[in-house]
Length: 109
Image 1 (cartoon, helix red, strand yellow):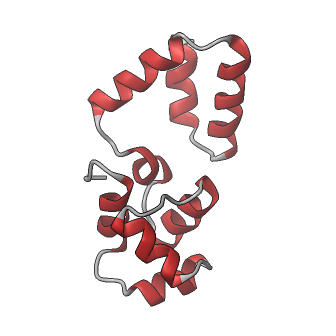
Image 2: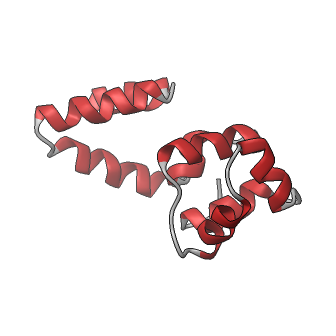
């Protein structure tokens, strides 16, 4: 998903859908969407998942963007984590059903 910030990716994901409609579909407050899209706050992982589902977009794309350079940076950062932190991250990724990311991080873990 294009956009360097979560705010930009939220706007892209919403597309032509009205904020009110997205709020209803994702079961979040419309004012929260306004704050997220303006960069005044960021959505929780739970809300990112709700929005991604409502907009029918990739959860990982919405959360992190689909930038290969960013992927490489994330993998490099993952490599230096201690085993406990790696396991926590892998559990989170697994709970989001992001199996491709799990496979990629296990390669470099």
